[in-house]
Length: 535
Image (cartoon, rainbow, N blue to C red; front, side, top):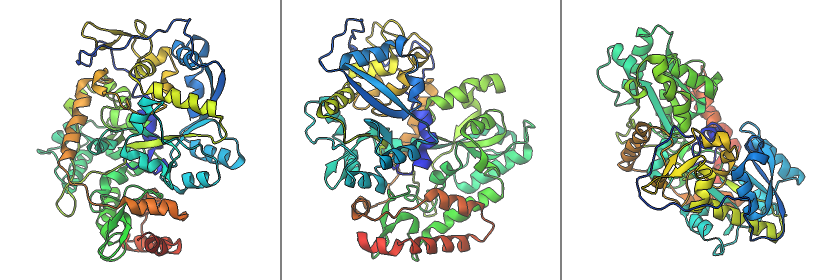
């Protein structure tokens, strides 16, 4: 998936980072029958490393994850195994981007830090400034990490042929990236408002939402569609006429425009003409109330609360239906609020057809964000960091960092599968909130089917259905070499998709006028020169 736009995803990752540890109950198993590895978590663990090292790591809310150091057996096991002490350097979803850039400027970067920079000029600038430690090509000493890095995604971690970061994988195949944006809507209220059929195009969706608002079956003063971040709507709406345009900053896709490649958002017979149907669609949806009028002010928690309490007819979520936050913040309370099951009342919106009649989903890279290692770390510390990542990608490390301690927070049942026996292991071992997603957002090279589903089965099934739909969609052609050429050209040109989306949707000026102004602004920033440069 294309995760170059850090603002676009700061809400998404807040829910994904706990998905590997937030558990919906016990007695769930993987059904593979494969024997899980035993783990020695006794206090007599001996390390293969003689020299003790302090390793500073900047990670979201790491101060809370490591706050119970003295009683956190998972953290103690990791630190004892590698003879290290993890020094937390705290960042938040609101400040991480600016904080890390400031540390880079003043030379105070921690040993390890996580961020979303590889799809922007920033990584190249840091490489040129000598701030980043190169990731060695030969990872044979770290077989799990070597296997993990043997991926097309590695290309996105390289600058001038050398690797400078470790991608943090979220999905295993392209079709899975459809889960990144999902629209849920109140089908029960639609039926109560007289709608007979589920919407099959954007016009029918708009009619349905308008009918729900007019009927207001639950007398809640219901409004249109909300979102956990208003810019999340760009991805599903862009598929109407510019399906490759949702990626922004320097990571945007380039498409063949006849005689040259251009950024997808500016494609068309005249520069940007292809985007106009999408701009009109989203402007109309906003002005008519299909998109709620206060969506720009709505926070993640407010959006979830509004949808749960019948204040919004639909919601755009991130991370898929089966991410734990959908269940934890809405699904598990649904019956208490409405007296019925979540999926009795709620449906997900099908893939809507484009203006050309085809169905597209937003194509992203497989990984959002990445790990960087400070160039100042010693060879010994570099070895220890890579060894830690290698362990977390192993079967043993995956189980420990996601499910905790055997016979304490989970057991291995007779079939050889994991059963959770502690409602939420990360409540007991807070370090799981960090360790379970430090290396990657999913289970990396491990077969996720071996581990318990973290939400009820119907949530997982809904995502599986959408992924199957995506497998039957055609992905428009694009040229990644143009993106790479831009990275390595030294140009700092970028496209702020979120800003464009917001300005056009909220403006009272005619769509064409606003878009023309924006195009001229990008020309002044060097758009035409950049297009010529990368051909």
